[in-house]
Image 1 (cartoon, each protein chain N blue to C red):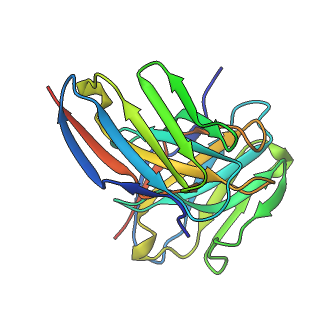
Image 2 (cartoon, rainbow over the protein chains, first blue to last red):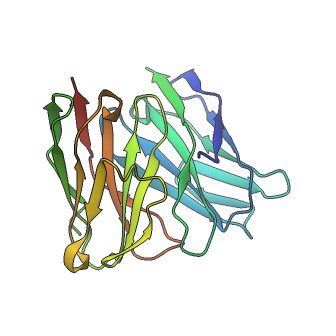
Length: 111
Length: 113
């Protein structure tokens, strides 16, 4: 079963704008991770945020986590055409459980 | 460091034929995963290995899918016989240990006709 649900399913923005994607999940987590997938390629790990963290930054990426609402958001600032990809959130339930992925958000950045 | 290697990159087979995929994880990564990704969906776990032991294969269709990780390094995933609905990208990933991010290979795109 897929725990994370990303919103929106698709997003189209102009280069230079910010892109925000949201993820909601159902059960408790140890950490939440975001991945990027370019068309026809494997997934690339972007950022991991642990359940006791509320915000994390990495370059142009900003991730927030609200465990009380069971939700996370990924913000990409000053987007570029190269950011065009699908973005997935994945939840880690702790122990030795594998990541469970959502269906993803397809981001299109128009130059 | 070298990434996760997968082969073949593409495979087209007829239904009821068999197919095998190979994965070599990052050196030192004890945990290896096989995910199936159907077009337009997120990856779905098929099987998880810790060294050469199976940790989770609850979503593996065992009547037709099998996987092994001999010697706790590389792994093979086999489908026999294939069905049309097996058309998907098969992704291999590895991680240093649980609680860390995964490194994915480029995947094998399987088309069953």
